[in-house]
Length: 270
DNA sequence: CCAGCCCCCTGTCGGC
DNA sequence: TGCCGACAGGGGGCTG
View 1 (cartoon, rainbow, N blue to C red):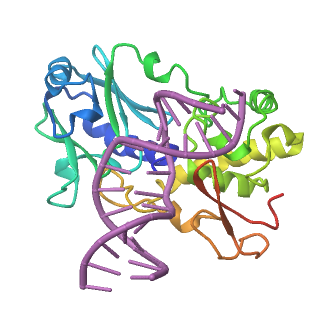
View 2: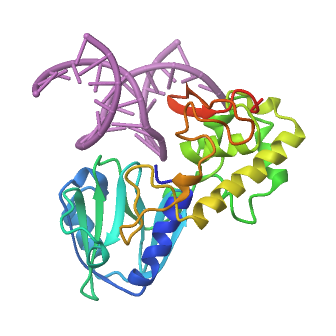
């Protein structure tokens, strides 16, 4: 559920609290989520390293450290926050604790244990195969058009393919296709030039709106201060089954596409 | 390259 | 009421 806007909001909410700090300790109650694989090896490599910058790449939270790079992926139900700034007393889903040298604790909570915490020397090991950042200058219409027209697959799963475009997940894929008035079942290479341009604009627009509203709290996502984002109050079609399409009034349909729930307007998405 | 399936997990919800 | 299967959906892996 955390997609680009949600991860970006977490990064922005944490940055001032962690940049400049060094790690003093690390412990986990679910070692399967970490790399290197054993808590001991992970901790001994991490402790003492200082956080130089905090950023985001695709749906990864990226800590650039004095020696290594720390990647945190929230997957479905992950949360990352400073314990002292989180409103609830006890979080039963805390899977990892990072001690910081300012006395605070950085907690990783994850109900479903899908999240990942990885420490690598070379960031490329994680980011090497990722597609372009859709909000960066390097994501151009021409490049998008070139790569899209070479694909024969279904457009919606393609938008969610992190090697094709980084950071788009199920929510923002559905929202982008609605805004661009494109049926999510279309094959990529059948999109004409105008449709491709509409889609390019739509992807950027829905992601920017998501960031401006600090993400969509459909169920588990929270910002590092414990509060919800508000993008869920502005969905066009996602999670809006049988509600009227905001554009034409037809009832929103839900189907399965690529093993994912897919919401769209059967009338004005063609 | 692409579609479809399973798996990793846990909580919620609807049907019986 | 309580059990059970479906579903939620990010990503990796495998097969045809």
